[in-house]
Structure formats: C-alpha cells, structure tokens
Image (cartoon, rainbow, N blue to C red):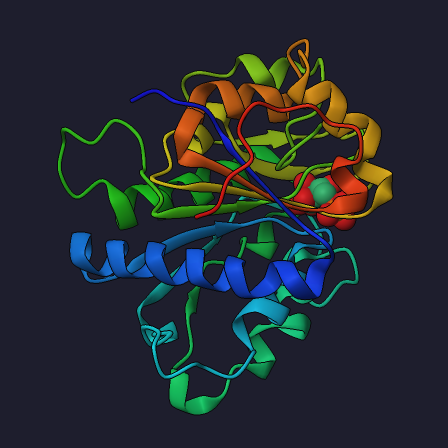
Length: 260
Ligand SMILES: O=C(O)[C@H](O)[C@@H](O)[C@H](O)[C@H](O)COP(=O)(O)O
C-alpha cells in the first residue's frame, strides 16, 4: 500500500458522471470476482443525485453491465429519522436512484437503519454493526468489514460520513458503526461508519462539487490539520479517488491530478 489519493477534476457534474460510472463499474467487477456481490456504502447530501446521473445513463455497448441485483448497499452515515422523512439518507437515495432503476437491471439489497430504535442511537448503531458482521465477517479472521467501494461526500467544514472535525468519534478504533448525538449539522442524532472502516475500503471515492467546496478543498489538500477528509486521504492513500468539478478545486494545488 502507498501512493497518494487521486484527484480528478471535470468541468461540471455532467462531465464527471460518465467517469464516475466507469469507476463504479470497475469496482463492481472486482467485487463480483471477490465474493459474487458488490458491497457498497453511500452517504447523503448531493451524492445520490450525482450517482443517479452516473448510473441511470444509458449503457454503452463496450462496458460491463450494471448488476444491481448483486449490490448490497449500506449507509456510510444515516440520520435517526423515519425512512420516509425528508432528512433520511435512505429516502433521498430511494427518490433519486433506487426508484428509478430499470427493472431489467435488478434491485439492490439495501440495508436501512432499524427505525424502532430512533430514541436509542447507541442500540441502532450496534444493530447496524451486526448487519455488517453478518454480511462481512463470515470468517473469524475478519477484523474489519472491507467494502468494495465507499461513495462519500465532503462537507464544507471537511466532514465526511458523520465524522466531524475535532469530534471525539475521530479517535474511535473499536467499533465499526458509532452513534452521534451532537452532530453540528442537523439532525443531531445519527449513526456513522467509523474511520478505520472507511479507510479499509478497497476503493474510497469522494464526490465534491460546486464552488462552496473550494476553501475546504484547499485545506484538505494543503495540510488538512486532522480534518476528517484528510484523515481518510491519509489512511486510504491511492485507494482514494476524488471526483470534483472545476469550481470545487479552483486554486487547489495538488501533486497528482490524474485519470482512472
Ligand atoms: O448525512 C449527511 O449529512 C451526509 O452523508 C454528509 O456526510 C454529506 O455527504 C456531506 O455533508 C456532503 O454533503 P453535500 O454533498 O451536500 O455537500
């Protein structure tokens, strides 16, 4: 392991989407070879919309087929709200992507939070972790779940998943899924994958677009001072790829801007 995160910059989201699609298809192929399924974690925010742009586009004859029936989708973070609530990351993903997948491509298996536990986010996180244990840790030797792909956003303060700058959760090393009850971004109660799980992914993708990300992108790539996104870069190294648009990276100096 080594290298550096890869930073890809596109003129706009429409130009970014086809490369994101190719990247996801490559990760799907690798996952299917590894365990005949594709285990993905996704965040909320603007990501589901961009994912939809990438994944709902018509297929080209040269590419691998999207096999959604082999996908297992987990949430990199989720808010402790009912599944049909406007703050729910599941609700967002469903509206933007899941409901629009053509029947012939199959439907992913989606692991939602247990909404009986909205008042007990510790238990909600523990149960979600159990889902990961069942899905990933068939062998005792598995110490951490290894997602085939994590698809993440980056907040204007440098947070990712529900891992916020300066928060004690950044030091969590034992559990795979943690509760948070004081999220600075509402709603306050959430669950999130922890940093060791995020940085263990086979591939880790950030999608960060729009001029609102410009200042934080500079900080992340020019030092970062322990920002959550920087910590993922440092832990994931060349397994991390950033999909950005020009407004988000204007003025960001970064040694490696590449292609897939
Ligand atoms: O539940 C959440 O709050 C999101 O999962 C969060 O982590 C998001 O990914 C970032 O805030 C980026 O959001 P944008 O893409 O909307 O900037």
